[in-house]
Image (tube, rainbow, N blue to C red; front, side, top):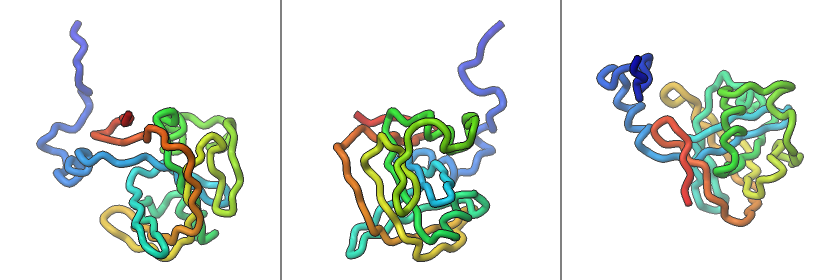
Length: 167
């Protein structure tokens, strides 16, 4: 018996979307978006835009619980995840079981924007300014109202379908 190093159920390269394959070749920071409710989702399509005020852009699934909570509250928190947060990222992405709910276990710190992981010291509090459909997602734009910066830690990055860490 031979064990294949590749996934025998994966879609062959020539049948995959070239746009999705391009996106996979662009590394993206892994973040956790949370909103009062609480609701949360792992998001790797997050962009911070400097200015007065600063803005945050991201792509969400418009049918996600976090979008419903953000739309209802008008505010949300975005936490930069680190190399230590792989399981947290998987749990909020729906890839790992979450007995008792997404926010069960682990420590959480309540903020006016939504809960943030107690062990993460870098996060932003955002006020929703607009949202519109883009591609198969929803482009969410927010004004950054609060920023908390901890010591720099190696970020968790998503690249070619897997988590990677930068040192």
